[in-house]
Amino acid sequence: MLTFIFIAVAVILGTIGLVWLIDKFIPSKFKPFLNILLWILIAFLGYKTYMSVYEPIKFNKVKNKRYAQVIESLIDIRDSQLAHKTVTGKFADNFDGLIKFIDTAQFTITERRDTSVVDEVLTKQFGVDMKKSIVLIDTLGYVPVKDSLFKNSNRYKTMMNVPVGEEGAKFKMDAGFIMQNKINIPVFEASVAKNVILFDQDKDLLVQENQVVSVDGVNGDALKVGSMNEVKTGGNWPKTYGAAE
Image 1 (cartoon, rainbow, N blue to C red):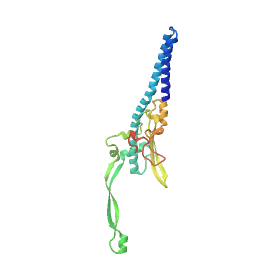
Image 2 (image 1 turned 45 degrees about the vertical axis):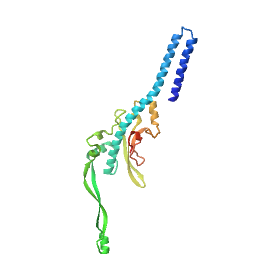
Image 3 (image 1 turned 120 degrees about the horizontal axis):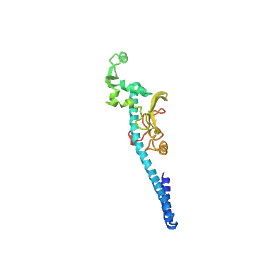
Image 4 (image 1 turned 30 degrees about the horizontal axis):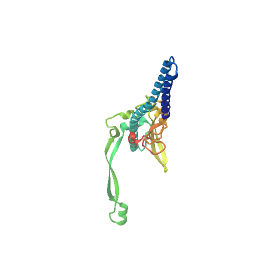
């Protein structure tokens, strides 16, 4: 883009120089037509130079606004999935099951306390009362997952829908297990392509955005949370958009 700006400025200055030369050396009867053409060319190049600066600024404003809205939805999906794992021991692999879980599931409220009881083996061995320490988990009650995560909001019922960008687009979501240290660990991933979020924006700038590799940007060609390849529940966006974890 900077190269284009330098070239455009050089052409504009060259054109102005040509106008001056024409004014000095071209016969008077040709001057009006040539001057009009040259000033039209100057105006056109000036417009293209302005747009080459303005378009990326406009693109970034749209991008940042849409990314922020998408990230809010991804955070809702992540929180719902973490609740699902807490209660069931695994992540949901589809939105219908996840929404049904939120509608019906409950968190168990427990209290942990230490106590001691008679150790029958040692008591029998030594002939006197011997005690051992144990931990008791008392159930105090239950709290609906829906109330805990969303209070009075029903937005979880539409969290599969991408809130901005291409109309009717939905998040992709998958879940399963990966093996680590001979243990099956549950994982999940929810994502949406940048091409979907920014489908109506400048195609050249969108190609550049899909190739971003930066600590201040969203790397890769999609916004996503979680991973199907590693134990991770964070998002791939930088802190400028909010906490990824």
